[in-house]
Length: 413
Image (cartoon, rainbow, N blue to C red; front, side):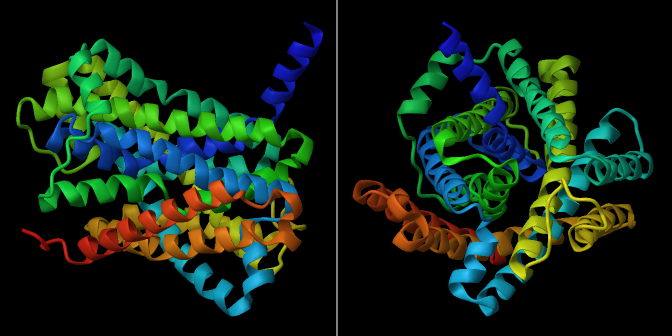
């Protein structure tokens, strides 16, 4: 019995990177995408959650394994194995994408708080200062605890979905019976769900977190469980957002364009409680992601250029790390406060850049994970390699379509 409890305590000490990455994946852009999916297509896209769950675990597990075995972040490994030129261009794309994503998160903060009657000129500056102070004044253990607590608040969507009493029988059938359409709007939404769920920044963040946390190879099995829990947390939230919007908005043929529209539209249909839970979930997700996404970029750039990085360092020890993090927070918040800022164009551009970056990141990951000199006995097995390459090829094809349909949204209409 004592040994059993020791294993549980050890697991609890190790969890964090996988669950945090999975939770942040459901950010303002993700919630908007899933809300639109439910509102426009009902339950017909729920079947995608099972393959997405598998894809997600494969990508994240490889990064966790690389981080534990090598003790280095993904960007460091790319620089050391593929050269500074490639690393430089990947860095440029990542910074641009993450700036756009950070702006999206502050847009989510502004939109969600306006539902509660709070002006963006109050909510955005306060949120930005709080986010900045958390990272600048905290250490890794403190920051991780805050992030894990924030992950718990995603239960808002679960509660809102359950109290709504949707038709569970119909939902169960939709989960296991693919309802595939070849209409352009359906395919574009399918691509958007995949592109939103598997994002480039996730791979950099989870590997950097594992390295900074100092997880050893003997605890690798617990980190794999952490990744599975992260994937599960992601897909459960996606499931309930789609179900809630499908049951209330699709059924009544209500069209929406943003997550804020979804929260407001739920009021007369599902009641104030569900609407406010949805809005609070959007606020929590936006603040959470506004912390993590700039942090991911700071990790990547500093690792790539050989600068000191990590939350446990002081400003004097890692000035480049904290300056970059601060710059992204300040720019993201300020742009939201500009009247008539082209937010939709910024979000679209960041999505395209993410799409351009993802295929390269996945290929780099597979080449690195199969490098015997780098990984020793922890390279992919043949079966795992086949699955990984097939998944990577599928994701690359989907990403290509995502980029094309984002640049040319009228294709297929």
